[in-house]
Length: 400
Image (cartoon, rainbow, N blue to C red):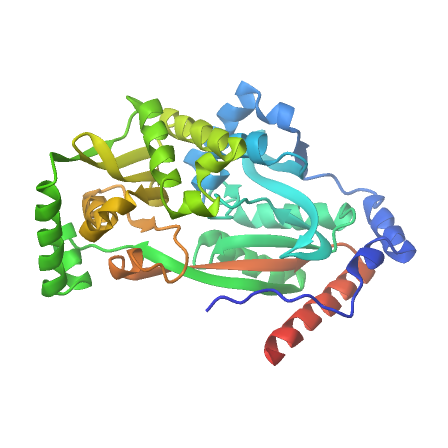
């Protein structure tokens, strides 16, 4: 069950962040002699350099935990289109001269809508996993280096926020071990779960386990009736052929539905349109994109974009034509998506859907859990303040 962070009403966090004793503690930590920076700060200008992008790509190929939302082709367009005005930095871990870890950090005073200054792994509304990019075998070193960095130079941040970490992944397991080793306080800010596809069954057998014979019969009837409306075709693409047309079709399809009316469709703003266009092109170039479409007389009535990062897949965006809702085109397209179960290189797929999604949870029966965690940083005063903040947050939750 999701838990929403609650403001500690009796603590003026902005004033405390600027308190003289807190600033002196931070300054003293920054001046500790004999401690070398283990993380390098990478500017956006440096990050777009081809040599760094190549190193980032190689790191993605040997990542401890696949996460397309932490790859260069996703992060850089995100910062370019959606990071305007945000204080975003990239922190990189090098071992043996090679890039071994990378995380995007945002500095903000907005903590779930409340004015609490903190540092956070930077995500936006269209990024669905917060696992940093870390090479296999370097997880422990990465967490030690990250926490050490913020102990020495926390700035105004009162704590470090790590959102949407896969609960059962190697990064979260190692994080727990490092927190215990360092005796470092942490607090769970949010817990979520969403539909996941993970099975050794064939697509046919999986569908039989997920839905009753009556429901499967109804889907066959809907497919037949939809085909009577015109020439019904299905397409699956994993290259860049026709990509720009596909992007335009998707943006128009999504904007024509409830998201367009609510103002949350990608086409509703120039920034999200640019982000989506650049990200899709980058994913295709990196060999990470799979596109599915159900078309009626050549017009798309359901579309899906998957990010393929073996051994996992992330269902990034989907849309359907609401005029054909009685035929369930979105579900019919998801039946085609079950072909993921036949792929030898894929062990699981993350729906990236909200918890309790009425369509996908009728089909995908497994769950993926994610945790958003706050971690204490800095010296004694800052850590004492963190304990007070988290105590108030948890106390208010308990009373709710």
